[in-house]
Amino acid sequence: MATTQARLALVAALFMAGSAHAADVIDVHRDANCGCCKDWIKYLETNGFEVRDHVESNMSAIKQQLGVAPRLGSCHTGVIDGKFIEGHVPVAQIHELQKRDDLTGIAVPGMPAGSPGMDYGQPAQPYQVIGLTQDGKDVVMADYAVK
Ligand SMILES: [Cu+2]
Image 1 (cartoon, rainbow, N blue to C red):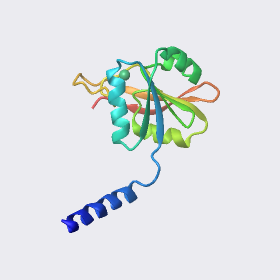
Image 2: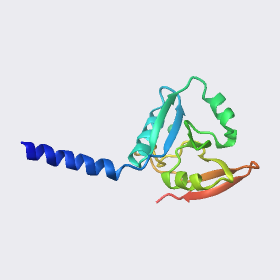
Image 3: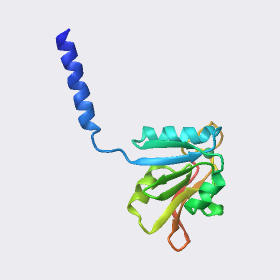
Image 4: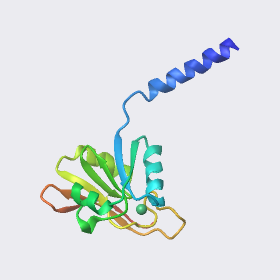
């Protein structure tokens, strides 16, 4: 019995050591009844991000505040290191955003089927991940074609 407990404690200690580095935190602002927003949050957590979930009553005010250009708009708006993450953005581009101080944020405009958190069995749509530069220009960061 004691041995089993010791072994469990050891496993727990190793697990803690393995995940000791602080998780990157994303604040996610969303409407109360947004199901695909919650699915995107789950996707972020599965990929090692820590999410602070904020239910908002006025998303358009939040987007305006964070400088999300209306043409880039989607459902939820995430924030990491003061930069916005608009819509169903894949983790690969979030990691890239963290290294890019020339960008104020990134977006997947609309809610394309097949993007992370938008897997509901419908036919996938091609989509792009767009970065917004400090001087207000769009840059294509990734192109996801339909497989
Ligand atoms: Cu959505």
